[in-house]
Length: 64
Image (cartoon, rainbow, N blue to C red):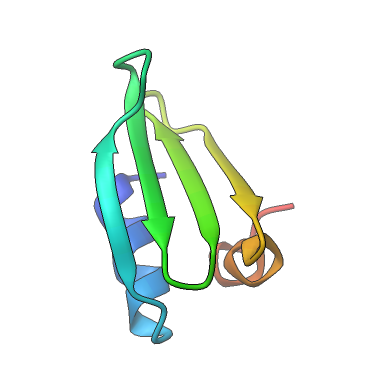
């Protein structure tokens, strides 16, 4: 998945992006959202979601 697509999908639901930066390894993006979710999007397209609001984000992105 593309990082800009992910941001657009989540933001369209009313959840605000609070931080966007490259991850510590330099191979992807770390996105923080106002509901407490943290989304890591690797350059290869792999996505992981963690944090308090992760269930909501997973539903929005249709990922398990």
